Amino acid sequence: MKAGVKSRKKIHVPLIAEGIEDEAVKLQLQQLGCQKAQGDYSHRPAEFASFRCETGIFYYQNDAGNDGAKEEKSA
Image 1: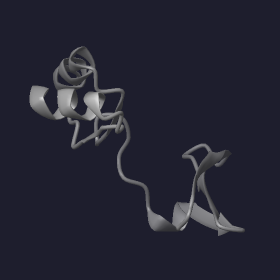
Image 2: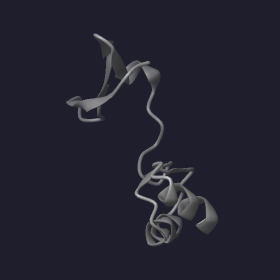
Image 3: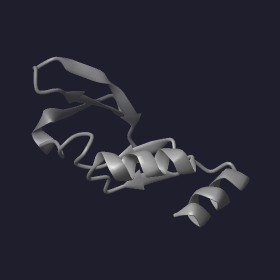
Image 4: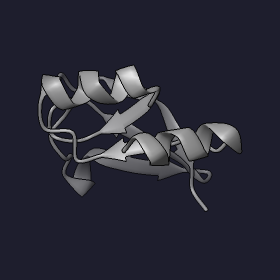
């Protein structure tokens, strides 16, 4: 992991850690310098039906039924 994080820092490419399942792994990656992560620890996968697309921008509806912020433009 250290080598992957270091090499990305040198060339200024963001690194997104995937499959984070617990606090210990999250903390270890943060200490190495990884700034973004995804996995069941932060949030369970959402059903596709909870997303909608308008004008090329995806929106996510959270469990409380409120619209979330714009996630990311689609390709």
